[in-house]
Length: 132
Image (tube, rainbow, N blue to C red; front, side):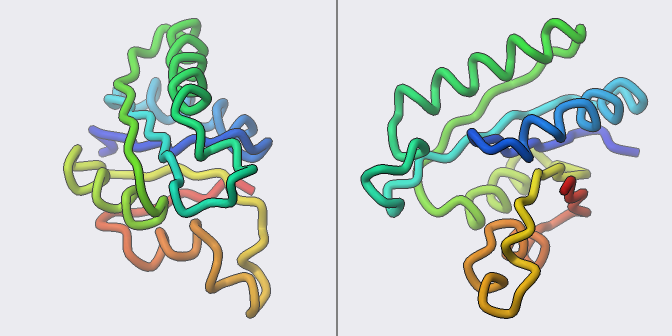
């Protein structure tokens, strides 16, 4: 059912909270796991996700975390606008499911326009599981 699962990751707590759910789904369905992290060049200079070394370390740490669960993950690093790249990569890897953590900032009318999760839900080529 979920042959390929895409898990976009960042430094947020919500991403860490989604790891157990990702592990469960990947193991249950025997899915191939793709970890994606985006270097946001459009982010504020203070943004942790605008530093290439930090993003590379984040991906390596996540890959190791899943390896401890006997899950082999392929890492993908891209540069640009997160919401569009998540959908593009989902197309490239033929993802059957995208799993994302969400801070809930897009639940208000004002926040919906800026929410990466909300944009991905609207643009994704496959189902999106949002973990609050």
